[in-house]
Length: 172
Image (cartoon, rainbow, N blue to C red; front, side):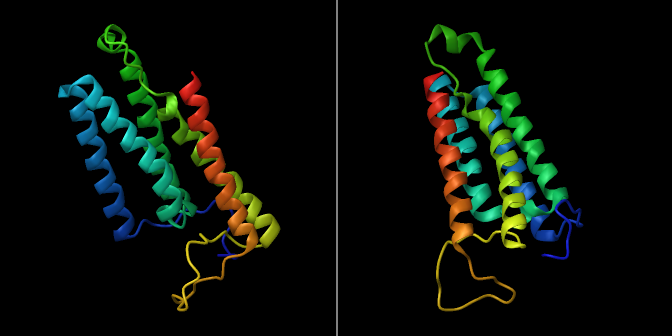
């Protein structure tokens, strides 16, 4: 990966398209639930959808997000999360029932920007992309790089950012 520039556009692979399609179908399902579901159920499903995508994007998609083509599509989903938030706060039924939509919907944009800052940080310090330090398995996949302390720090910074943003949202 060191030979690629920080922002690079690769053609999307079949697996990338499958992931995008599955997430798009899931997101459309959440919008349908928004349209026809009860208010508490809508908020619960939407919140689970948003928070899970914020956590799992970093854990499972960090390599795909390096490709700026994939990143821009995922950023489009982040914009849809923001649109969903503004649709929910514009719903008068939520005000009447004293149910508040969560500003956590807006965090996806911030977390994707933090992801790029952490990538840059890792490239400057380690001269390589960060790796997710999920396990120290005795076997290695071809081309897999040993994770470092900086990789662990990147992971901690991302999840602390996620937690802080979530806590700030709960205070609003």
